[in-house]
Length: 274
Image (cartoon, rainbow, N blue to C red; front, side, top):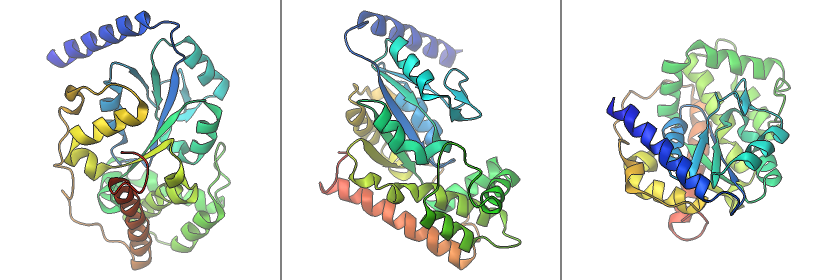
């Protein structure tokens, strides 16, 4: 009851705040992308609790169909009709479209969420089970042509094909899935794009106050300390490391090492985002 009341009051505060700014500035789009089971849900909810942000989640039929964005003209109309400073969309299935989306929507920003591959694989297996393997099988069997709105770069597709084999286990399929999505950060050269902020799940749950403040600066919205409430690091390393064949494990560790290095660069002042 208390949570429901708190949510209702927040929505009312947002409605009043947004109506008062009506016509002052156009609504900007923001996108949260990355890989499934990488903390995108909790990040979306917490960022969406900003008074200046309306979350449009991937299961919202107003903007999404089958977890994919509707025609961009539909999204344009949503932005035109909104009074909020920012509409935050979560098209993680279409992570490889992020450059297209940023180029289309003027003034837009993106958050790229990544989580260490081993915790992600464990989480995917618990939540999605056989479905992850079925998705990866369809990727390989169709030579990645099954994607309708986005394209996997040839080098990423080639590595996934090389790693895939008969009798691939559930954890190994999840590892390939993680690899394909997280490889997007380098394949699309997002590290050099000031519109994109890399957020590591481990940082987010380890110091939510600092990370959500950093995200708010990137999105140019006010930060409130209450936005970081209820975020805990208990999910990090909770389960035993999944068994992956060495080639898949090495590939995942390589990409994860790159993501960590990219994040460290922003801490050292050698990149954008802080």
